[in-house]
Image (cartoon, rainbow, N blue to C red; front, side, top):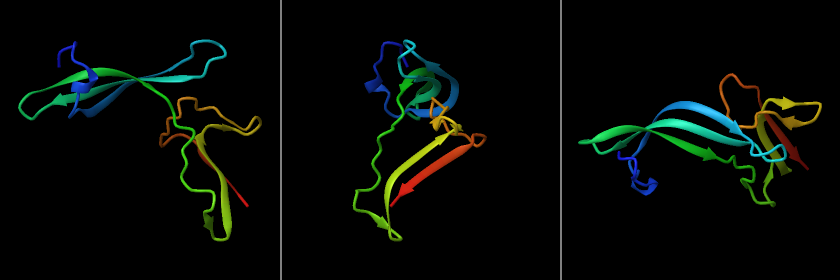
Amino acid sequence: MKSHETSASMGGCEFVDLIELHLYKESDDGEVRTIVDCEVLCGSADEHSTMVIELLVSPKSDIVLLNNDAIVDGYRLVDLKVGTDLELKQEVYRNYASVFSQYARNVIEVSGI
């Protein structure tokens, strides 16, 4: 791929490897942002090449899975939180990058009425 090609021309790319994962804060009051450097393989079967791309990733924290009227086993789901590295004293997830791994202490909090 030539360096001047745009992301619109990157169709048909496949993930190869995660190279680096960075956390970034613009200021002390700013939110933590995740920057991912990864290697991708792009092109057709006849001609392909690898390139390193850098992505700014924003975790989704407002995903709606159910409507408010959903009843399961007589309970209505009010809230569901999924994360890793929960600090119980402050009730805050300390995994700012929101990256899950097989070694992380994954936590699911369910609230219902």
